[in-house]
Amino acid sequence: MKPLNIVVLAAGKGTRMYSDKPKVLHALAGKPLIQHVLDCAVALQPKQICVVYGHGGEAVPTAMQQYAANFVIQEPQLGTGHAVQQALPHLVDESLTMVLYGDVPLMQADTLQHMQQVGDGLVLLTVDLANPTGYGRIVRNAKGEVQSIVEEKDASPEQRKIGEVNTGILLAPTKLLRNWLANLQNNNSQGEFYLTDIVSMAVQQGVEVHTVQPAHEWEIHGINSKAQLAVLERTWQQVEASKLLAHGVTLADPARIDVRGKLTCGRDVEIDVDCIFEGVVNLGDNVRVGAYSIIKDATVAKGTQILAYSLIDSSKVGANCHIGPYARLRPGTKLHDDAHVGNFVEIKNSEIGQGSKANHLSYIGDSTVGSRVNIGAGTITCNYDGANKHRTIIEDDAFIGSDTQLVAPVRVGKGATIGAGSTITKDAPSGELTLSRGKQVSIAGWKRPVKKISHVI
Ligand code: UD1
Ligand code: CA
Image (cartoon, rainbow, N blue to C red; front, side, top):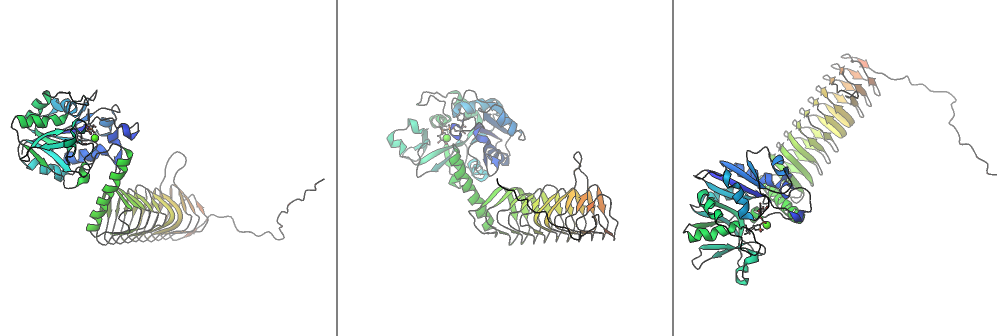
């Protein structure tokens, strides 16, 4: 196969988004539209990627700088043909050039690979639409051969009845494309240089014009407004949900799950309603995720139960753990197997050993907790002195009484017990009871204050 150049058109204004942000930087499934397109482009292993941008200053190149692409500005924007002309200096001649749209985010690599396989000449991605309004129409002759593309605004009433439309995505031999683009005219109803005019040029030169249709209609949907973005987001989430169902995942409601990244599930995983998965999430066999949970960039090993309203971010959870309801695991949390983290417990940058429990109302930050430790309700690690963070170490089999403050840096030895309500500022020795508490006293004969009676004169 000839080497491939990919040109991504992204200079359009996006007026109907009513936003200061360039259209292609709005997110679908948690990722900017153009990033979906670039990820798809990269999957085709092209020699060159060239992004044509326009509005929003350097916002697009800056946001996409992780891609090995050339960014060329199109200023002013004189049409799709003019846009591709801007990319020409970056394209290699002995190659094919594919044109993608930065605002058509769900194009799938399979469909584009299909275009690469149909033969030489010009390849157009087209689709038959029940309502073709607004699109360029594919005009064919009696033999069914493509003759031209006519834009809606330039089409005759007869041509407007054609249901096969131009998606805008095409593949052309670069050398021919260069010649065709050099000959574009803007004598049309919009005064623009139309990329679509290359089709009739190809036909005149006897270059074959092939058409390919996408596997799914949603692949070709472009975004021009927040309403279209919202609709396509739901379409994509349905696709994600269907993939999970096909893999055997139980979804309480396939219409109420959001995957903004890559979710991988083992066998017999159950996900209750309205959960959000972001980044890369791996759920092991038999994991259950309760309603309204949000899990981001995390691994959860088999058999773990996550109850409703739990948040897990950049954490690693072992097998058979119990989490939530209302638990919050912040970045850098590592739970070993059989750990329990209950309601209103926040854990950050900490390791919780096997079988250890923090079941109620605690903050555990910058801590290393051994195995079989019990952390009583309301325990707080005071990890921050106002300037620096310090670590708390709790060794195996320790028991921390309720409402304890552990003022870091501090260590609780193996098997130590801390009496409830203690403020621990020094290391607590192994195997001993440590407590810091005022002695309980009762004042005999003490009376409650009574309210003074004010006399109104
Ligand atoms: C274009 C096609 C039309 C097709 C439709 C599919 C042309 C002349 N028409 O029409 O046949 O059915 O797409 O959606 O090609 N862009 C630039 N610079 C420009 C103009 C556009 O980068 O000067 C980019 C836009 O950001 C967008 C894409 O090109 O990503 C398409 O532009 P748009 O204005 O939406 O094209 P249409 O007129 O809808
Ligand atoms: Ca459009």
